[in-house]
Amino acid sequence: MYVCKLCNHSSGSLKRFSEHFSVHRNVMNFDFPCGVPGCNRTFRNYSSFKTHVHRDHQPFSRKKDAQFFCVSTWNCPLCAVKCEEIHDILSHLRVHIKHGVEIRCPFANCKKRFSVRSSFASHISRVHNKLDQIQLDSTSSETGTVLTESAQENNQEFPGRLHSSDEESVTDDEVDVSADSFKHSLSLFYLKLEAKLLLPNSTIQEIIDTVQDIHALSQQNLIPKLKKKLEGIGITDDEVTNVLTLFKSEDLFSASNCKEFRSESTRKSHFKAVFDYVSPTEIYLGEDQFGKQRFCQYIKIQDTLKALFKQNSFIKDYKETHKAQPALQRTILRDVYDGRAFPKDEPLHSGH
Image 1 (cartoon, rainbow, N blue to C red):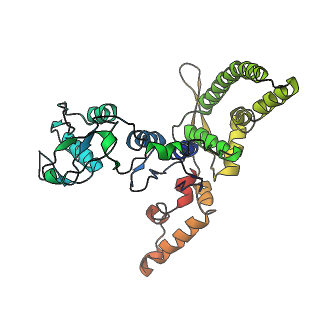
Image 2: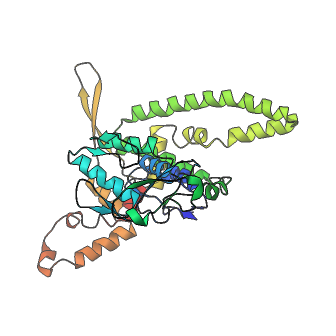
Image 3: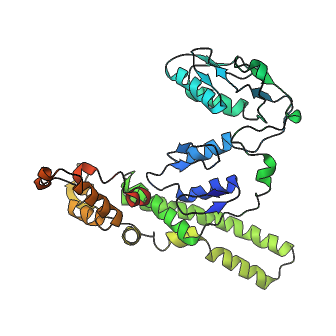
């Protein structure tokens, strides 16, 4: 069972678990954990997490004459390092490439050589991603040789990978995405455009309006096909109408863009209600040489501090940090103790 650390969503399918994480892709300062037992890797963004799951933990494909590592002890041909896991072997070879050393692909019967890490990673993912199982060989455990065995004759598995039957048994699970989760994810994306990517509100509005129009065109293409399909399986006209009405009314993307996020003012109202959002103050600078109005923005420090001290966890960390200071230094006026309370403040990291 895979459990999401952000919302406690659980799923018996790694595929569904990774799909669920897309809801949290715009959460700032969150490391996406792999979730597979025995794999402790984390990723700074959802795209890297998804690529890792697809590349390293995809269900096995049955293939004769699959290649297997001898991973009892693998000796690096370039140095004295020994590795016992395939992940460690590949990571170690990438370190050599980083230091400017050309390496040879460690797989049997593969003579490719690489001096660029991205090329090496692409080669492993593209050419050697169909491994079925690992075969250990006691006779060559100290040589680091690579063996070639028939995938049909061995029942051991690649550590950390999922067997195809394990994944197939749970592929019918549905990803449960509530309306609130969807709206929260969308609001984080729009806030990211403004606060992190620093896009002006006029640009954000253009993005929302254009994408909404494209989405509406897609719906206009889909609805007639859905109607024809329903009529073709004998659904009555009234039932078809009810299904199409439900389909349109449950369109969360359109509903959100046409309500909470339809304008700059409604977005800011939503941000303030959901997050401890401090709206930037805009200053008019005048017109440039082309007659276009120019502005600058700043965030009020006082309003920022007020927002911070609404967080119970921040107040607690602040008090603990204050108590830790020597008595003589408590009389010195300073900021929030040089930001020492910030790294431990979970709401700041997870909500913004």
